[in-house]
Length: 55
Image (cartoon, rainbow, N blue to C red; front, side, top):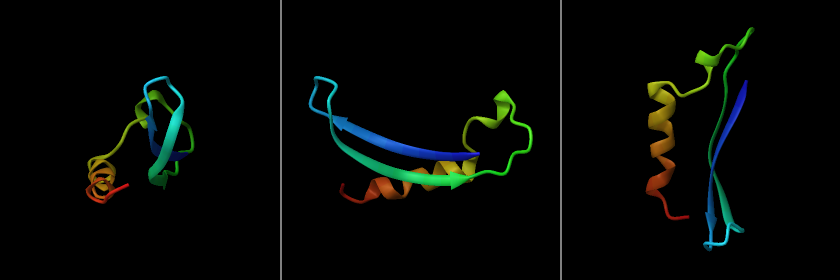
């Protein structure tokens, strides 16, 4: 399973002004279950790192 987390910035009317890819990762899952959706603690911490840099 490949996951991409993005931030979309809009000007209030729903039109995307800027899209920033925050993180992309791959998780090997043979048979996907609803519990596979979500982030591990390490993945969640990885999302926080790029947010410290200006967009």
